[in-house]
Amino acid sequence: MMGGPVDREGPVAWEEAAVSTEASPHRHPLSGDLRTVLADPRRLAEEYELLRNVVEGTDAAVSILDTQLRYRYVNPQMARMTGLTVDAHLGRPLTAVLPGVQRPDEVLRKVLADGAPRQLVVSGRTWADSPYGRRVWRATYHRLQDRNGRVIGLVGIGLEISGPRQYVDELERAHQRLTLLDTAATRIGTTADLRTTCTELAEFVVPELADAAGVELRLDEADVRRRAPRGVLRLRRMALALRPDLIPLAQAAAESGQLIDYQPGAAIRQCLETGRPWLRNRITPPEWRAIAAQPELADGYIAAGYHSALVVPLIAEGQVLGSLSLARAGGSAPFSRDDSVVAKELAARAAHGLARAMRFGRDHAMALELQRSLLATPFRDHEDLETAARYLPADDRSLVGGDWYDTLSLSGGRTLLVIGDVMGHGVQAAVAMSHYRSTIRALAQAGLKPHQVLRHADRMVAESGFDRVATCLLALADPHDATITYASAGHLPPLTLAADRRARLIPVPVGPPLGTGLGGYASSTASCPTGGVLLLYTDGLIEHRDEDIDTSLRRLTRLRVDTSGPLQRLIDRTLEFLAPEGTDDIALLAARVECPDADGISSADVEP
Image (cartoon, rainbow, N blue to C red; front, side):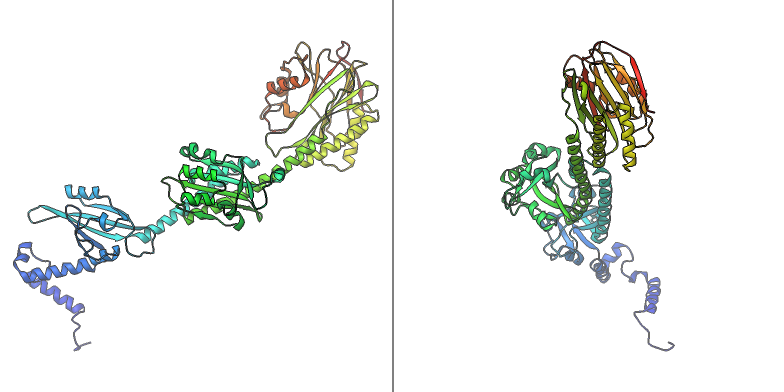
């Protein structure tokens, strides 16, 4: 307001100071050359006080070091940052004052040598309390020289960047965790095989998350007879992965497939009983012996130099399937809580794949047992007939199917040979196979011709509402007439292997698969292969991906085997020559019929 008091600390004061400075430039501190300042003690004191206020009032940590990198001065902010008094710094190097902070002194010596300023990022811990587990500073160092140009030391100015750096580190760790988990989704559970899934899990976390990893699962129904004594938890180690340099030290400690008994107090047992992760760092040898399942395992862990362990449960659909155990050794960092979170999430995702593999395994075992129990064991019921058979399930454990073979002794010394393949895989296909087998057996016992057996079987299955079609080939061997009568429901042609080792496909009229209700089957009769073997088979024996079926059949005719030896050996040689891919089941039925020498198609019966 007009006429009011003047605020000497306000803008007017600064304007007056500016005018005063312009009028009398030598009166303001920090102006003029050095000689002028040194010649005026009053100005020198003013300038020193001003500079001192700037250095000691800043939020930056300022320190002056001599040429031996010992502290000669630290400002109050530097003292607050370190948690020590100013006097505790003076005359001492950083390593003595703050042993928890690592500083590259060789870089500072280069500043002393060439005078070029350098910026450093220094990290560690000081004596002061801090919310950050790891403190980080960014500092710039300049060389100091006296009036004569002699190097007298360094000045360092630093600011703490722990907060921003921690934020960036957390973002990076979060990104790494997401990347790790996303990658796991494509590398774990690639098959329906339980052991493969466990191996993929163990090998994925080494070395991404640990130096060693094991997957332990509870025993399934097949291991009932191996249950542990009361009070002991028995698990099966399904997979073990180790850092290469640890293999000689720790491999024998717990091999894959080994049954391990866990006493009360064992780390893995604590994890499974609580359903929560178990974490321990800086484990001593006595502690290892207390938390390991067995003393010999503890010895292996100690020999490998394991210092940290993390165990997380494998839980799917509310059921604890087992555990994922991790360990770190040597110079690897201890496990953190973030590691525990990542391992827990990884285990949760992997557990669903393991549960799926377990279900597939149970279905496979059930179907395989059913299938094998229903397959007829070839026998030599008539002196003129010798048979042998083989069933091979697909390599993929989810692909147990409905392939079957059968031999049926009929009146008059005749034998019906049957080979078939139900559409699809799994337990339902095996059940359908049993249905077809029983139907064909009943019809054949009624004295029907092969094409009539197929016609009635097709109609009966279609009318029953059964939705699984099947291909089938019947071969009725009559050694007394020296003939074999064939009928096919969409099946591949039979093969004769002659005594001269030549292979020939037998042309057989082919009707539609069973279960369609279309009918239209025919029988054809041929003479017995003299001194040879008749081979019936399912498509898994010859089919290859991206190959025409005619090409596969031509490859079959190039088969050359000795027909005079045991039929099981002949089947072995056949499988070796064709080298099936293992993507589908295989059924083989070989028959040697002792008949008079004859050849060619003798007659044919066609369904009305």
